[in-house]
Length: 515
Ligand code: NOJ
View 1 (cartoon, helix red, strand yellow):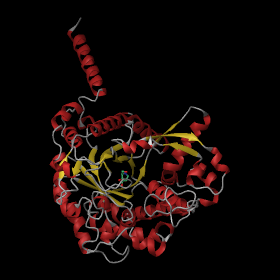
View 2 (cartoon, protein in one colour; view 1 turned 90 degrees about the vertical axis):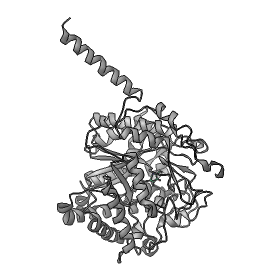
View 3 (cartoon, protein in one colour; view 1 turned 135 degrees about the vertical axis):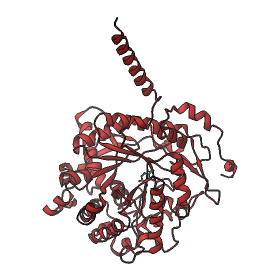
């Protein structure tokens, strides 16, 4: 056989070995991704900053929500104290090798009364944080609203239930673009808009905790689950649209930034392959992500939502529809798991109906008894590929940033989170497959950089790749195994979970006995 043929065969064998090794989670690093692909970590203002009532900041609806609960460890008003420790935290990002940091601005720190005067100390903090990031080569990806609407606007006019929010949000965005836009290239108007309205106005288990009997997951004292989720969503969309218009008219030519939106995204897997369950899967996609993605891409709500919610879902004027259509430069996706769905068309015969009844679908969440076990989410990386394919096929292959992905586990002092290494590694690999199959994904952010105060779990279950010792007055940060894995991956070293696990086995924190 000729030498060329042998060489060709050798190359083929090596390529095959590489594929096999990769499918076993071996020989894999960031250089397998396109060169402009960004890797980072995420947090949000109230969950990480602390200094809740310091230097002129006033409360948000997130503060109000958190104060109703009591925690054995940690204090949400102090959280990780990033307000004072931002330089230290930027060092952790450098040590990990992050390209970018996704964080949010606390509206009530920057503009304590929701509108009007800017708080100079709030302004200084965000300038300092952004400058610190940039001077260390870390790109700021900034979210304008991550759950924490100023409480004053909720008290004054019921926040997102009132169209006045559109003007106030746009003015707040204006301040952010004007003050920080010379250094910030990636803006997201709203974090998890779908969860904000579903949790906040239908079932009541997230701020501002509104719901009405019999729909609440908690006993709400105010709200109307049949109408309010639709109204709040409508105003969020319009507030986004006007903020984007302002950016494009006033800043884009000079600042060259991109503006996106963010949604919690599940893959909805039909329980059976019956026509009914398959349609339930499609309805779930339409109600959960399509609720926002349809208007942002096509200028109107999905047909099925208009049909099932009837007059309870507001309509867009022609101008509003035009404003929204094509108003995202990218979509931020928070992906954690898949959900199995079953048809529940019977719910359409009931009155009154909330958003869930309108969806006419039963969601089979992962086993809720998992809360008493170590981790929260089943590791289903293939479903991430399916979600990305759905966005590609249905929403014109938008630019995507995976803004959040990670694994929650009961807060404890062991830094050996090998289950998290596996979860992150498998999802990054799945993301890589999606990119190779044509997804326009451009970045991945692990949730979360630190063990932050969690939206649904307080300090009981955390996601951090750095452990934060809440029993230590210094709130000392300690790298977990997942940080080591991510760091190796980002530094281009081919990683296997096993090698790293052995290295970190004994790094249990000395304060263990105090928790
Ligand atoms: C959703 C939210 O964006 C964030 O605030 C929350 O803590 C994480 N994902 C985990 O649930």
